[in-house]
Image 1 (cartoon, one colour):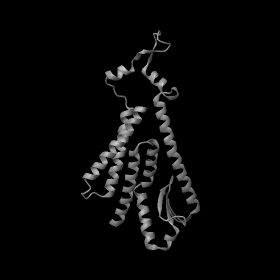
Image 2: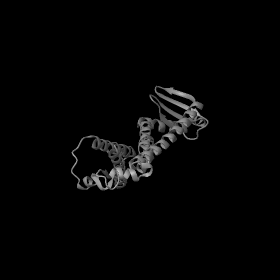
Image 3: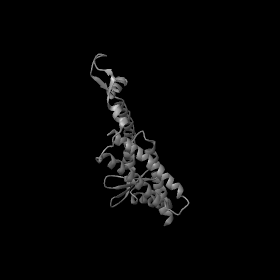
Image 4: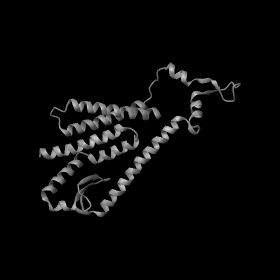
Length: 238
């Protein structure tokens, strides 16, 4: 499990570096922001699937002399004193020397768990504040699975994806400005057409899974920017 987790962290970083390099090479071309968004999402998904398959599928492990040497019992450390003939493995020695007598890997998992809990707590606070905002808003229009709500507590419109519905939240003052209202509705509608709400949830889950990996945060920021650019590009194209 530890090796699989490490592979996931590595491939996320490699996929990020590869995607950024490709974007820089092709920035002078006529590639749309929607295409870059799709390419970025595909790169991340393929990288994660490759890491999972490589870690879960049984593969024959080549013999490693150095690894075999370090896994052998340490002949200079005895369990019952110098006269004992029962040597301790290297892992037991590391565990004994680690703080609290735990193996060093236990401490790593504890740090990762604490970081993930912190991310999850921050996400929970954000969801709580969002629910409060929605509770204070009023339904302006409802069309199929799309619900448009207005609130005086908002300065910038945004959209979100619920379980089986899409929600667009607008500033109350924007309702009296038809031109701005039309642009905002088209922009937020593009987010739902592109599936941005689902991807926002997926990227938050990736941050919780890899709380100490800076490349996970870089992926979220880059894809979020591409989502906005793709929506603006779609509106300009109209």
